[in-house]
Image (cartoon, rainbow over the protein chains, first blue to last red):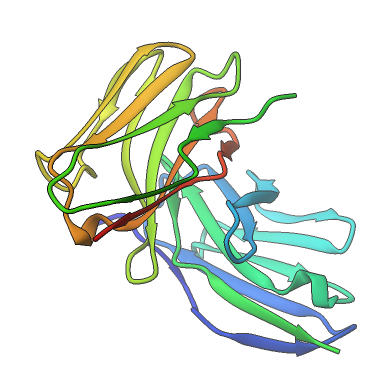
Length: 108
Length: 113
């Protein structure tokens, strides 16, 4: 069965710290990987996508992909209270499959 | 640019009633997805369409659920009869291409009492 696994959290980090969110997936045929952020009561919104092994940086966010180990991670530098949300990992071997999400809490 | 538009945003209905959720995808997108989100099960893919054709409906819970896409700009998800366990947020999403980013609507919050 195709699965995407995430630690549900909550992950609590102090303001200004680096938050590290991890995701593992089971389907080796997966080719595209996404991180979405979902605030309470809102819909998921895209933060980043990554297709190739290695790192991809966008502002305070860095996505890391390791296909051999079947994991993808998201680093948030200089975490802000406004980053407090649930972060969903999505993997797309054929159709988008979402993990259950990790709840991040950034405290002042 | 208009995003994915869903209606109704909120619906409260009694058990046994028919519920119809509506979705207008982003113009030009050829894939449309229906997801359901609950605390217990997270975000589940119910069905998706490509060029208005249903491709995979293996996520549809049971025969009480049906979905249609009569044209490129409109889709419906129907539940008949509705049950309390159908209470959830139903998201419609669309994308351009097979493995590209999907964009979500604001969701339809369904409560069945």
